[in-house]
Figure 1 (cartoon, rainbow, N blue to C red):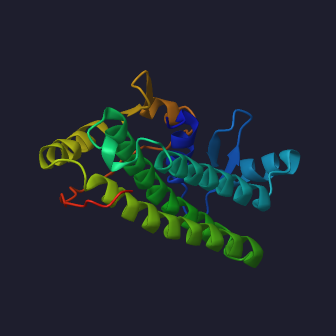
Figure 2 (figure 1 turned 120 degrees about the horizontal axis):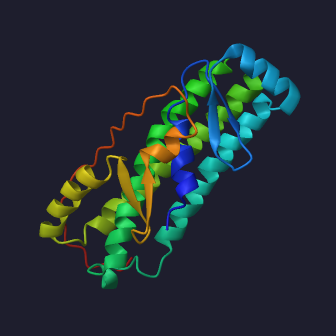
Length: 212
């Protein structure tokens, strides 16, 4: 199961613009700050420092990587279960999270531009970006391996389904009882238009008799 709050935070982070800043509200959802005067006043009273902003970004990235590892460590992520709904759902969730993490990286790079004159903060953000790049590469390789066990007919349906269902107008999470909708994220971002460009590519089926 992917927490709604995690997907919302990743989506919001991806919307950070150059010279933009963030804060996190009491409910744990990251918010964008765009008005310079409002930022300075709010930061004066709430002590929302650059270091705190970097901490919040790193926390979301760390949680994301923990969820990815949790999915990979599931007992269903084994070739003996490749025809089960759980195996297929885990592959879909891995693909979704990796796509959102890649999009969030662009926002983090913009945050680095905001703090480019602060070498300490800029270096910390560099480490976060390096961590993202390394893990995206590793997890993507593992995802391709897991997807190789899926049948050719499912692969075609899988990519078609992703392009239709993961346009983030209504992305299904966990067992379908909860929807991550554009409206949830919109409630935390004012005057920002959401455009979602998640793309998913077909994976070629390959025979592999090795155990995971």
